[in-house]
Image (cartoon, rainbow, N blue to C red):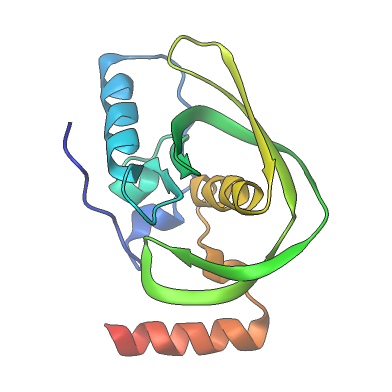
Length: 160
């Protein structure tokens, strides 16, 4: 399957709340394969469907060599706190300190309709929150402290 082009801000699809997947169709199977193929590249931790232009609730991940996906993810639990640099394929070249929960757990389904639970701390916890934010129409810049966000937006405008 092809590696898909990544949508970048200000593309409106990135600000759209994604629709749940109600039926596993051949198109959904194709989407999952494209998500997995596109995230399976060094330096990529996660990829949501809207980042490749599809407004459906699905994301893929590539954490510590483990590549997978989840459909209809729901962020069930978070705890603790971590501060760290965060970036995004849809906001190329910008990395900013972003506060997230240290631990996160997501529940969704796979292509066979079986329950999938993904959880973790550190980079895994950060990725789960980041991708669920995408599916709700948010980018990580929305989570930055006010003064840092202002700086990021100036830098973003200058990069275009």
